[in-house]
Amino acid sequence: MPQKMTMGTASLAAMLVAFSALGACSPESKPTPTEQEKHAKDQGIPGGPIGRHWYECDDKRARLIDFKNEGLSIELRYKPDDQPATLSAPTQSLQYIGDGMVATFEGSQLYLTGKDLQVECQMAKEDGKGAPTKGQ
Image (cartoon, rainbow, N blue to C red; front, side, top):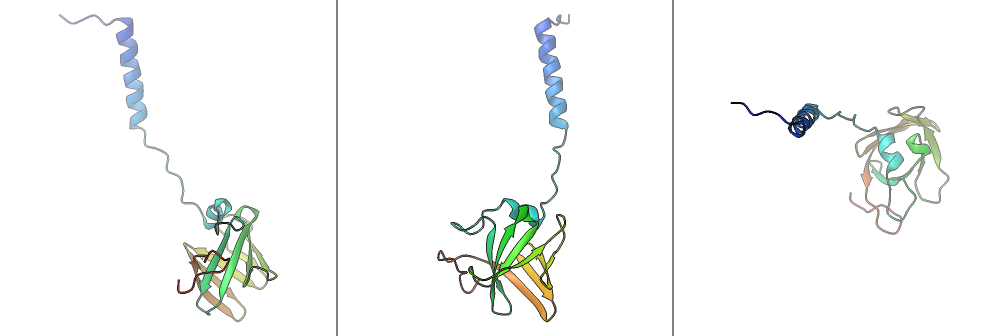
């Protein structure tokens, strides 16, 4: 003879069904963040300004990049005290443009193009004294 369901048993059964339904739902996947989104929140060089990174380039010159304006603009310089070249992107996921050049980020790579300029750069580590480490 089947047992009679009590109110407590019915509530427990309803909760189990609800939790099972929630568990069956797949979690919402988030899109991969753009370079601008990553750098808008990153910490950059330890002890340095937020969003500051050194890049070693194939023309044997390092570039210091400061990400500004929540990742929508960058300041590019060769040394920390140089006057920066400022480039900006109108929205997330677009190239930075300005000062006669275009900067494109792809992972830890930076590509700079412009008149008489075609450079590929790799993000470098900082030496603790405000300069990139050599041989990265």
